[in-house]
Length: 222
Image (cartoon, rainbow, N blue to C red):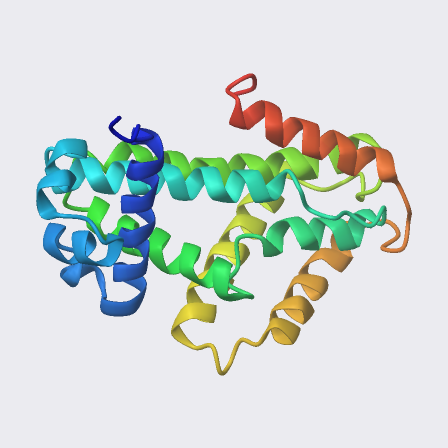
């Protein structure tokens, strides 16, 4: 009896092989032949799942986004919102091997999206997701009176968004200058003026942020 193939898992396997090729050899080497070799599959099977390279990259980007989203739902929050907000933001900064791969692949896809119309909407969606996550967290923290009442939420969202994105890029390009300790210190210095009391405890607000992230991922919020 022929072995039943899980086509979705095969596509995920191909996508993850594409990530590794990008990480190890660069986007210019991310050809169908090289991805097939990395995945341990014949080139013909690649064409069965993806009719062109853009389709493969779109799926690989979505799979990457899903992986990040799943990790966000399992962050081990401490109950101290100041520290927990840092934990949330650090998920988008390459502070370990998994996040380094994610950020390198993400920015490689972003560069390709400049000249690939099929990737452009998804690339914009990924950046908008990060923007909405930051804005949603700041809004919830404001609603429970943990942040200073006179903050301009729109401005603080943009400032924090730019900081996280910049730290992610510089942590890849200059890892010797941006250690995890330095990234933590920069985030701490930025966030301290926003909070009324950095040591305040509140388990409820991070639970609400987690619920909001899950709802946003499922398309229940916009």
